Amino acid sequence: MADYPIHDYDVLVIGAGGAGLRAAIEASNAGCKTAVVTKSLLGKAHTVMAEGGMAAAMGHVDDRDNWRVHFADTMRGGQYLNNCRMAELHAKEAPARVHELEEWGAIFDRTQDGRILQRNFGGHRYPRLAHVGDRTGLEMIRTLQDHGIHQGMDVFAEHTVIKLMMDGNRCVGAFAYDREKGRFITFNAKAVVLATGGVGRSFKVTSNSWEYTADGQALAYQAGAALLDMEFVQFHPTGMVWPPSVKGILVTEGVRGEGGVLRNKDGKRFMFDDIPDNYKNQTADNPEEGWRYTQGDKSARRPPELLTRDHVARCINREVKAGRGSPHGGVFLDIAWIKEKLPNAAEHIKKKLPSMYHQFKQLADLDITKEPMEVGPTTHYIMGGIQVDADTQMSGVNGLFAAGECAAGLHGANRLGGNSLSDLLVFGKRAGEYAAKFAKENGAGKISKTELEASAKEALAPFERGASGENPFTIQAELQDFMQDLVGIVRVEGEMEQALGKIAKLRERAVRAGVSGNIEYNTGWHTALDLENMLSISEIITLAGIERKESRGGHFREDYQAKSDEWAKWNLRVTKGPDGRPKIEKIPVVPLTDDLKAAIEEGK
Figure (cartoon, rainbow, N blue to C red):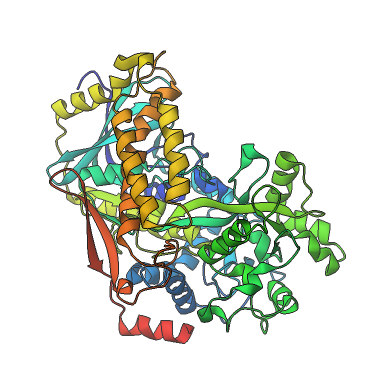
């Protein structure tokens, strides 16, 4: 153990996005010695790419909004597979977390009377998203980072955790390596918080940044924690489709919230053709009413472009497959049309959507104030993740907590836009609070020297195989290709079975992956170490997709297109079986209390 630097902490937070930083702030405030380990640089977390805003029922724009309406919207969006206790806590606590962020220095767009402005977003009944133009995630990270760094926490940037260290059924630390120098490092910790984000880099077209290789989900699974709802992957309706170098980069839902409309190659607003029955009383049946809604008319109903993300993504997919798509395989998102309604439309768009304006101008040489954007579905978010206790965020492994996208429960079968940023704040705080409490009540555990040495040897194996081994980049690219094609936005059992066979073959090749060159900042080595996590979680997503024989939320089965009353009763939980293989079981959905049932009925 002397070969590896050893650091002792009360609370170790893995991940420096919104959830990780908020957890670290809370743990540090509780008097715990706290460290944050981030795969990238501090301030570069994927949270900065969240653009539209954070959902919180503050009622600043429409005073009819309250936590009960937000709760009902979240449950309906999640197709009632959500952990209702998490949805309740989220709806109740989100406004306080937003105001807290403001107190720490976040600068939000304002109403005319000086309150935090809120915008419309898909699936939300009222304008609910507190925002800073279309750079809300960036402002969140800036604020949390500036506030948190003064709390006394240590930051280990460009470090990747490759294994959680266990003492029986308790997580007592982590084994990591420095990406720049290639040196191993050991963290002893009384409590560990996972806040590592999602899995999007297992798919070819994704809005996710390079760090999203399913690390937290895989680390927790290997340590004995359960994963929940892994079949539910969200494909955001609008990612860039041109040029190829930027395919998948997110185009915020805020474009549609500000009046942007979706058209096919014939100029038709196709979203009016397919409005689900349970949304018809809330959705405009003509363009003029939809426009009035985006301008704050309380008597108007929302445009169909602001239906839930899974529905909009499937409608776009349908248009493209029917040959009615744009030249580069997407559809058109048009915000420029509002010049018919606003005399100063160009300046209005630049003010409300500055990042989108510059993104398309710089990357696609397109002026969104004059021309429509080409967009299409992109792998964006996974609703599933580590199963946690709703109140404490602790997993089934003692001392191991999780928050943010790597945790499951809040979003059910489909996440509403904007709920992710408030999720990071609400449950990041709770994870940090209860991790600190656990750390204070439990002493340090014992880390096995033998296990550390075995982990280091396994991690260095690709260098022993050298250039004659399998190319890790090739394996990763092949995984991304077939996950996109076979386990993507529309699924069929036969294709998912094919994917399982391909994953098994890639596993055989991954154990033969080899790299050459120096250990310092060797991207081939980093990719070789990521492969196990990506393959393991891709297999679990596919197995869960095969098991759920219905269509619900982010999981659409072409061979089982209807929702099933029977499947509405169950979540799918995955654990590592005695044979080392994934074990899938159905568990009952958390039952609603009478008060929460009443809130849902009011919402209808």
